[in-house]
Amino acid sequence: MQIAFLFFAVLVAGTVFGWLARVIIPGRQPLTWAETTIVGIVGSGLGAMIGNWIGVDREVLGFSIWTVVGSILGSVLVLALVLVVMDRLGVRQPERLDAAEIVVGGETDRVEFKQTARWNTHTKQRDEKIEMVIAKTVAGFLNADGGTLIIGVADDGSPTGLSNDLSLGRVADHDRFQLWLVDHIQRTLGKTPATRITVTFEPIDGIDICRVDVEPSDRPVFLDEPGGKRTADFYVRIGNSTRRLLPDELLRYREDHWG
Image 1 (tube, rainbow, N blue to C red):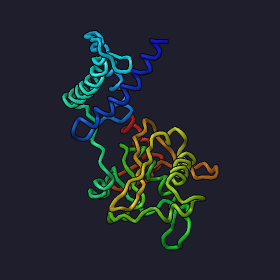
Image 2: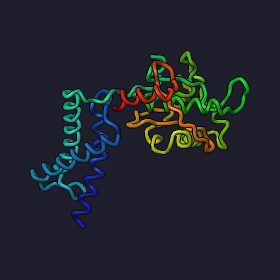
Image 3: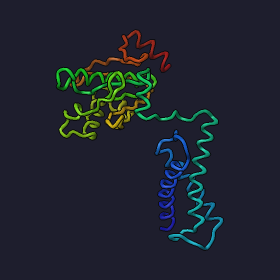
Image 4: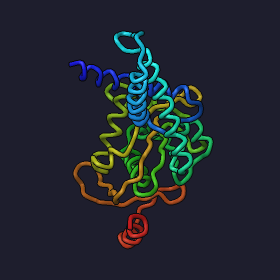
């Protein structure tokens, strides 16, 4: 019972102290929160063992004060060590820019702006063709080197917001819009490719936009029209646009990109 409690305490302490270390260490962090948690648990466990080995009689909630101090210092030092090693080996992940910082750079081979995801600004109603453009853009990023799709931003980079898209849901909120977007990707591209996208919402000049970060796929991803129609179209990001490849082009691209 005591061992189980100690194990649980180390997990909790590692999570808390790992996140605390992330805040203490200056600069952008290349590690995700999940990776930080794992590093924090490892550092907290090592620090706790060293602190317990040093040992004193003073206790805090049943633990040696040196165990607590060791957990904190261990989390910070191990996280710092991991960052240094990643930097030296050149495997440090690229910094995650804010949406506002991405927009300043304009559209590229890894960045695309869409004013809406569902709403036709001319007809003032839902448009399935616009919905399919979103799926095609995501497919293009999946089949290339990944990228970021920002919804709610005009071509010139000015934020337009999500109010029109949100109005098409039963409830006009971000959660319903995210559910629709993920479901749309699953229906057009498949459930496995949908696991490679991350949907978040960020403000730009006080206006909320939707950010879709797309990881590159390790195999070709094909797009099907919704409603069960099998089309298996292949889209890829080329420059700052998304293009559909013909079968012979797909064969050459597949060999060059995935081997």
